[in-house]
Length: 640
Image: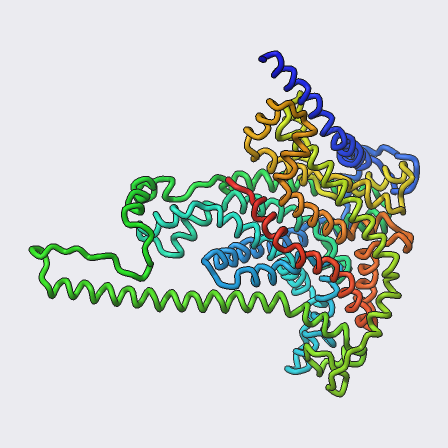
């Protein structure tokens, strides 16, 4: 029997290598090779087009650090990026934690508020740019109405002291819903007994929040801080589409500088050196964060605090779960207290409970006011977008008219459909929608299957080099995409798939991050199920397809949805990899329209209608599969 089991495990190990083989091929071609190629290019004077590479040593690195004449925006854009990071990361994490804490306090309407906050996360990034470009227009948008009404001259995107902050607020608005769901799911995983123990120990809401909730969700916060920092350091879309880096370079981020260096100035070697410099910055920040931010799950009560948690839990079990506003029974011995003293104590307890009830009601009202105002701030831009997309151009350009109901210039209700007709023609909607459907459909289907295979192998099958391979691949997640953009373009040209739909598919056919998530799901499955199947003679393939895969269906659904959405919203890669309009996707086609609208307001009616058309498929998917998205994100929360 021992020999048989050894043979079984050896065969399973051989199959494990077969399971990760597609991932290895993908990783070598579109992850590891680009990293090495980009590193080599950073030591050359390659212009991005020629077939020769002139090795020049460290000259590119020296030039970007010292030559302020050739590269005047390098240090300025780096400073701008750090300012943007300092605006977005603390604000988004703090606000998301605050909102999640409110939602976690048994608020009615939790599902409505979560939906309202999450809608921007499923809206095309180019559409979000269009929405805010119109809202913030100083002459005809919502800001234009305020300027006209109060005689002001607000121009948030047109002034150097407000443009970057405005884009930062936009980023927080767009990502808040996702952050809230992740943090909320982490809060729900905290043991309720810790709150009860803290309450018995005299802790109110704020003590519970800072000494139980925050330490309990610290692993999630740590993970989100790292990903938020990496994301903010690679900010590009809104800057490119809405401001072009202006005014006066105040919104020129590091990524935008890299893009211009590569594709406008044709200095691929310098752009690669800049990308690697960003990579080293990310590594340094991650190391610093790991030293500063506590990562473990340890509350004050668990550390010993005022009283050991075991002792407090015993007291909780004796008292039981009691109503916060029902006084505990006062047992007072007659020989120690008079009737007057007893009455005095009861009156005092009544006053205390009355005060608690009043404070509780005020707190509930305050929570609903905050949530309602935030929900309105999230929903209003969409109502404004839809309303104006049905208005005639003259009504859109009228700053005097402010209405969420489509009206003409005379104030009469009127629906105009010509904007949508023009948008369909301008976007070439039929062709680009088909292209998008092909790219997203193929990438999603292949991603799910291959990522699940690799995740299962890393979690359940033992083979040589498994742990080392997994660690190397996980480390690659920290590498910024800018490093791989230029080499992947070169690889696609060598494969002769550039400027085709394949260039949008092959580089994204797998995802190391999704492999990590799938591995976590398979790792948490009970061992008994597989052991029983092995004893029944089932092989690795049968166990994978018949037993393990069905058990992780919720995560498969949410990864399928998020993968589809990511490919749907992929703008930067389509911008650099596709030149032929017949191969455009919805994100690229709308991006060109938004970029045109930024410099030509007469395009606003078409831009608004186009934004509705492009966003509609994702919104429909979200509402149809909302239960799976929220449930999948909750089950995938990072735990300590």
